[in-house]
Amino acid sequence: MKVLSVVGARPQFIKAAVVSRALRAAPDTREILLHTGQHYDDNMSQIFFDELDIPRPDVNLGIGGGIHGQNTGRMIEAIEAVLLAERPNWVLVYGDTDRTLAGALDAVKLHIPIAHVKAGLRSFNRRMPEEINRVLTDHAADLLFAPTETALANLKREGLPAERIVLVGDVMYDAGLYYSAKATKHSRILATLDLPPRSYILATVHRAENTDDPRRLRAIFQALDQVAREMPVVLPLHPRTEKALRSAGMLEEAGRHIRLLEPVGYLDMVMLEKNARLIVTDSGGVQKEAFFHRVPCVTLRTETEWVELVETGWNVLAPPTSAAVIRQRILESIDRRGNEVSLYGDGRAAQKIVSYLREFHSNG
Ligand code: UD1
Ligand code: UDP
Image (tube, rainbow, N blue to C red; front, side, top):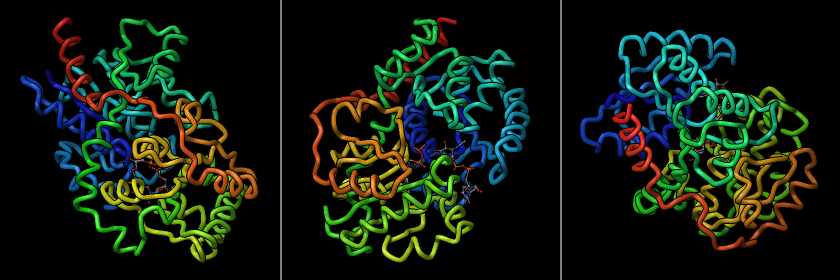
């Protein structure tokens, strides 16, 4: 069985790390790893391949840095050429980025079966580019790997055939379990930053709807700035957010009290997450990782795809429109605990994905 995996962005490298390992351990299975090049800085890409032992990509398209339509168009053209040359048995796509959709569109037109990891997530906010990417990819896919019961229900409600959908758990949870001990062993970030455990808030901001709306960007950074005067706030800065702050003339002000860092590698990130008193984020992955480490989380969005985190009390939404509301949510959430529940599977999602790929392949 030949599987062509399409990755390109930071969260996809982390997911691919665990799935690639399982694929390469399976008999009669070959993976071709295609990196589209969307994330290209060393600290957004290469560091993950090095730290997480992800095999070197077989193909790197080097398509990054452009605007949406330009990038997606170039990727559709380039991925098609690779699929025609390789003719894999499966195209494996992850999540909801533009390359997820590009890979799916190419494969469906060439009649190559598509498997979608992290299928069925919905924010019901059609202004998010990710929401459009996920819906279209799910409807093109042949095998849908849902991470949660909610995702499974979303897919069924949209009329997708039950025989195409399997609930496997979340590969991010597999990664969290696998790398947590490694992070403790190898990461020196707390000492480097002189941060005692539970003494600081960890924050990340990168969603387009927050960075590209100056009102939201200002509200978020004003709130974090106010909180940072009382407790350290550490924020590894995504390149999109750095650009947005710079062009709004807010970068210097943002760094006055908040400790802005370059993006960090996954092991350092896990270490920062595990030892934070609270996490404030608009990232999908980081919301869940907060829960994996049982750290309360405030999500800088009006809705989340990971509704079970809110329902169980681990996560609180803070609509990012008012600095006062964000600050209040942060202060209320410190030391909050949610219910002790298991939400994302048993840490074996990647192995299950590989078993299903093999089973569906051999059943034709
Ligand atoms: C993308 C995904 C988003 C995902 C996020 C993970 C889409 C539509 N969005 O958003 O769903 O949550 O990745 O981080 O696919 N840049 C650099 N260096 C890099 C990478 C990006 O400077 O290594 C710059 C780009 O030039 C661009 C900006 O950051 O100006 C945004 O990057 P882009 O790849 O467009 O999307 P993300 O915001 O990273
Ligand atoms: N992450 C990281 N370094 C950072 C910020 C995030 O390793 O500086 C990891 C984080 O732990 C999570 C993933 O990147 O596993 C989340 O990616 P991101 O927030 O970019 O995207 P999203 O999950 O929102 O799609």
